[in-house]
Image 1 (spheres, rainbow, N blue to C red):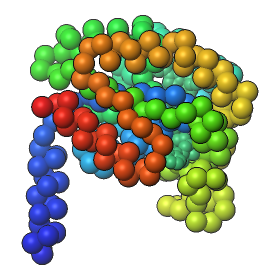
Image 2 (cartoon, rainbow, N blue to C red; image 1 turned 180 degrees about the vertical axis):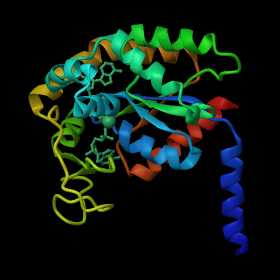
Image 3 (spheres, helix red, strand yellow; image 1 turned 180 degrees about the horizontal axis):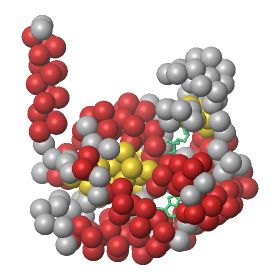
Image 4 (cartoon, rainbow, N blue to C red; image 1 turned 135 degrees about the vertical axis):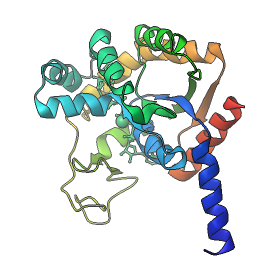
Length: 238
Ligand code: AP5
Ligand code: MG
């Protein structure tokens, strides 16, 4: 192994031996939570838990939760706290969460935040959460949402205007036909923004007030935003 390759390997080992703990990625619809979480898991080697993805997987499997969530999600309304908390509780019991995890899109109500804070407070040895909020302005969000396409096989995220796949309509990773999410219409986006303003912005204020909080500008190159999030989390963990 060359000396620079071994330095990279040793940096990676260093990162993987630290404990990142629970990291919350918050932000409006289209702010880049999923895109950033996919970058961050490469850095820390911890799982990405997106409540939106978990609900869509339930919908696709036709579970009772998926049937309830489907109509609410299409309209851009939130799924009730009790159902989402239960789903998250089950996911957090998986052993891959032991060193930490990235929660994307959860909590998004004060009820969910208080459930999560309570759960972590009673868990021996658990680090407190670090929260990062990604800020992007309204017109940019709308463009991101209407242009988004995702791969139903591997979850890769594209944008026909801003981050297009190499071949029109096909995933760069596995060639699967890309899909347009049912809630990525302008009408559903407006409802999602209403829920965000009324129910999720207070969650951001809650974590800002607790400290261990950073806001990052989400308008720029994906890798540069990810580097800013990593630096902020590492600073807040010191
Ligand atoms: P969810 O799936 O979480 O949707 P969301 O919060 O509306 O966020 P999005 O996934 O739309 O956006 P994102 O921030 O992940 O952006 P992305 O990285 O894809 O939730 C969906 C629904 O499920 C909710 O409406 C609700 O009904 C239900 N739900 C989920 N969680 C819930 C909860 N906790 N409680 C109750 N209900 C819940 O990027 C967007 C686009 O921008 C992409 O095209 C991407 O390529 C592009 N892009 C990203 N970053 C950049 C960049 N830096 N430059 C250029 N383009 C970029
Ligand atoms: Mg997402």
